[in-house]
Length: 603
Image (cartoon, rainbow, N blue to C red):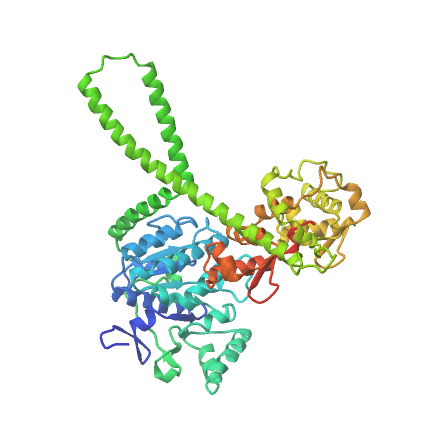
């Protein structure tokens, strides 16, 4: 805190606006405890200090900052919600935030809409936070308010919220590196992820009720303030609206201090206003037309830039130009020839030759650059495969000279090590595998159930009995960790067509084998890889594909990161690697080494 920083008065304490703006803050309090009133007041203070913010708001509170109350309203831009300046959906969230950062505008992403699901909320927050984490640094300090934070960083993390959790956790943990601060706003402490909440520098606690909530809160407070925990809990359980306790790093010697009611200038909706009671209607909202106009211009530029770099858009433009060129040629061929003027013809020839030369040079350079990139990648992949093959050969040949009358000793490689070159060649040279769909669906089975039965029979024909869930998922085109796959397996098992010899394997029973369609051809490793590629997100497939190419050799994390264009020590790479490991598609034979799973090979 410097003497020139604006300050906010919270109870008897004066807090530097910058110590709030750039830090992680947690605000907890049940409804009508003053939690949202306090945080929107903090938003007003940031606006007064010319520090912009982004409010991620599923409850429709923050748009009211536009409406004057006891004093002025503020020209924030509202995207989505009941009275939007700009439409909002998961695809537009990132461009809107990018435009707000570029123009220094405060924006509310209002997700209170019947057209948006909770899944849409998570996608919007993921996109917005990611755009700020990696794009805000050059624009200066910006704050992020997240209402109903437990929706995005819950105590229990699963497949549906893992991605948004990862982005928000990074924002709280290292947002300061991008000049970002954050406030997590939630009714109760127990719903919010404790690991994330404990990363916050400042905590503001308002009224809490409910035996379980208070017990959990007391356990947590005993770590912070062992001597005051019981007194704080007693005060908090009966605190009037606007009253609470705060812990702020660097203030009051780290001890808690009381929060007293603050006074906003913008309108704040209460229950009367929401019911439409007479006299409770707010004044006309502040016009933000200038800011909206500026942001719309930036949005158009951002979208145009994205389209300019979109390969599909470039292909479409090329095809359009080719059509126009063909039409021009046809028109020229059908036109009656005219007597050319010699001077004009010479000038046109020279001009056309010059323009064509330059255009052709640019197009040729671009084409060669693209082809060179493809060839360089192909050569790099081929080289990695050759290195693996040569290493395998070196390991399998005893290089000591033989004794008199003895031949060199050659160790037979394992079935997995033997086929690297042939597997790569097989993968590149064979036609696409035939889908399992299209066979007879026997009575008593659904299409998906028949596909799983057929996949088991196909694996069995290659000697894979029982099959691992990983291999069965790949062959039947299902993620083996998905609930859908588990549901279908459960139904088939109830019909006594399969059994689970171990928790991770599945085997056909005689009745199931009788209902399976006969495999059209022998099973190939390429079939497994094709199913894998269809099931995986692009980044995950890139990691597995790279590991497959050097199998049975292992790679260091640094080598794998470099080969897949990821920084080996980055959180993104670690996240992707963890997801692939959880799917049992790679293994760690030793510390620091990564290797493709043997389950991806049928030999």
